[in-house]
Image 1 (cartoon, rainbow, N blue to C red):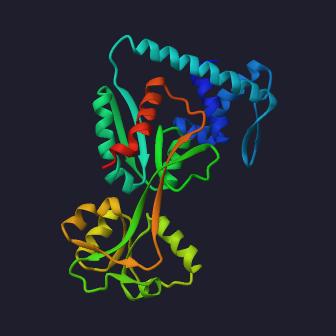
Image 2 (image 1 turned 180 degrees about the vertical axis):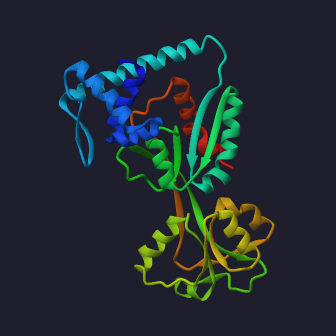
Image 3 (image 1 turned 90 degrees about the vertical axis):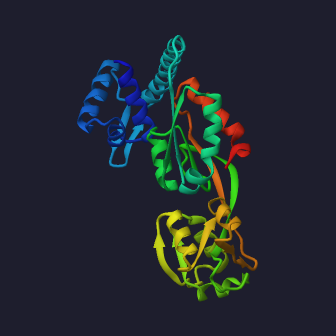
Length: 294
């Protein structure tokens, strides 16, 4: 038994799947199964009940998980203290939805670097589902998604809310205010990334509103560019269009009695295994985020 085996065991327990744990560690499922079987033979007890639904801990497995977490934490603390003897660069991996990744976090991360000059931060863009997946696989330390996560393995904390607005090119002839029922009159450039807009429309119209969607784009920047060129109207987060509104490239079309807010949540994995320096970085981001957003 070694530290690698312990961490692989904890991965299986967390993901409830030998195949997912093998995928995370980039080893074959058969190799991981052999390591697990060897450790079970050493302990003289089966640690998991295997089924088509995955792997769940036995009573012995629950005990093993408790002590394996303690051992891994002690080991990580030891490595951290030893690393403190010499200057090292600490890693922080962040996953965030596009609007947060591109328009909100860069200023925050600039402040983080000023206070933690030896940290290396990786900022990755992805949809909420991808962010959750990466955190569960522990490929990311912290994430930012739209709305709270339904995953029980993740804890969610709302950090800010950004209004999503209907906009058009300043050269487009259209009223400053419309009703929701008038929205289908206008060609709409749709972004599949803004799930909050679809949720808000479904809540108020029960799916009965037939939008005039011209085309669907994955990139918020592409949607914004198409709107600026007058190809149609578009729903866009305020944080992504502040400059264009100020320079009068875009204008807001208010919808009577309809408002969309994109509630952004910071998510982390419960009982996440990371060193004290990473925890300190995450705490600093939590503390200063609101005051340092772009």
